Amino acid sequence: MVTIDTFAMLDLRVGSIRSASEIDGARKPLYKLEIDFGGDYGVKIIVAGIKDSYAKEDLVDKKVVCIVNLDHKAIAGVESEGMLLAAGESGGISLLVPDRDMPLGSKIH
Image (cartoon, rainbow, N blue to C red; front, side, top):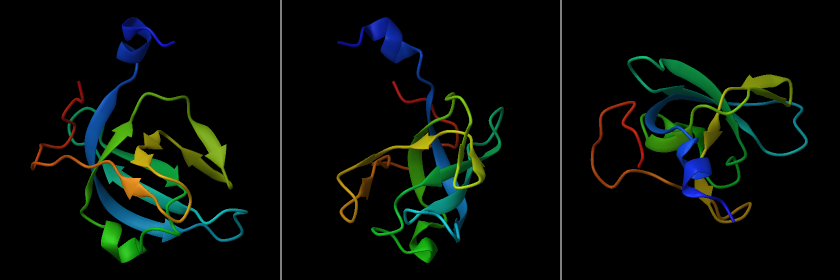
């Protein structure tokens, strides 16, 4: 079980995808996403395995929910600075998105 204090350590924020590009040579179908969180967070690079579910042109300007305070990790040679939240399995992924227009960097509670 995860305690509320452990959950509270996650910094979940709303960001807007500014660009999406394919990562050539990756074992899995991945995108390199540039996501703008505004204010103190700015733009972060996040690698996401959503290529089977979304065309890159459909991702630009989409507001999404991400974890912004994870340790950075190199994925397919790209430094990923967070995690995009989604539901489902490969090929049937659905991004978690705010149901109203929220300012960039809005905190998820």
